[in-house]
Length: 184
Figure 1 (tube, helix red, strand yellow):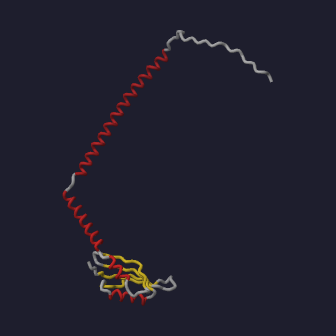
Figure 2 (tube, one colour):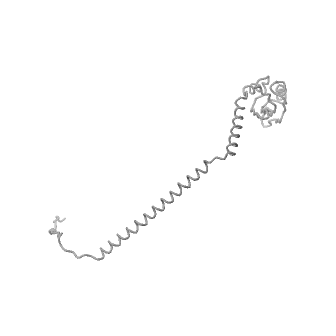
Figure 3 (tube, helix red, strand yellow):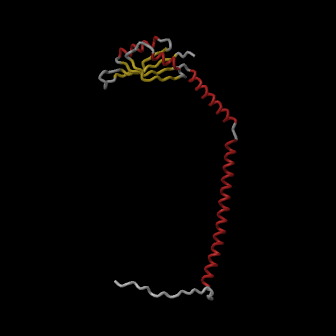
């Protein structure tokens, strides 16, 4: 391997005062760039003005829509108030209903062979719908007779019944409707 020998470096001389000739091509490109910047600036200003006008129109339209919505109609107010009063009365009726008395009167009794599944109430018609399951038909009929004998129910009717064939013990599911004599 040969040993490395650096080549001789020449001295660098910089002449900052030397006169150069002006290039017309460079000046022309500079003038074109300045003119293009001016055109782009005016287009930008135009777009900003249009955007401001559109935003102003949207704000005015929004305010006009709010003012329209705020202007109340007396007939609509009366209807709304009537609906609110009706709804409040329904809620008050449900809150003042003695639900514990209903549940106690349905669950109370001498029916060990009956399991209650669901209790539905219709306050307007004072109706009660009881879904239950008994071990057999006799248990179901005993429960019906017992409900008829309670002072809290009248018009007790068997709405439907079905023997559960898929179950080996063959229980009977049934639905009873009755009028609930609500005591307030």
